[in-house]
Image 1 (cartoon, rainbow, N blue to C red):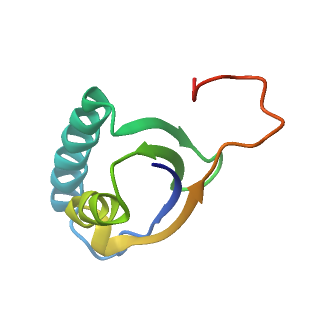
Image 2: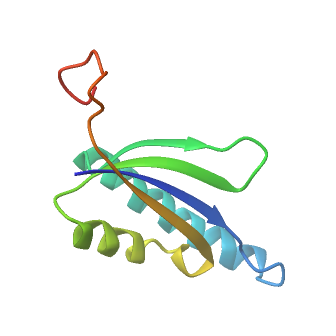
Image 3: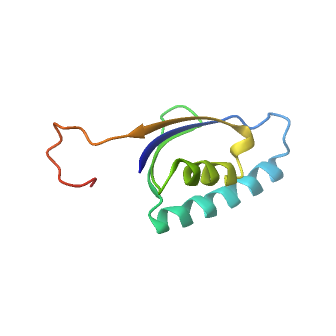
Length: 96
């Protein structure tokens, strides 16, 4: 199942820099492992914002929910999820 997920990050301004950097380092490692596994297919930064738009390829809604909740920055995020379906006008036979 493919999902587009927008994540807007709002780290509290009073969070110590070393704590924020530690959380971001763990987040980066976790997201890169999910990319290696093929579950986090694409990630793009949204220009001028501390946000990204990502494509996930997971088995179920529940799997995506679990993945997102495991993100170290999840408590500081606004998340929007959109399920994706193949468009009948697509010229591609797969999701590449």
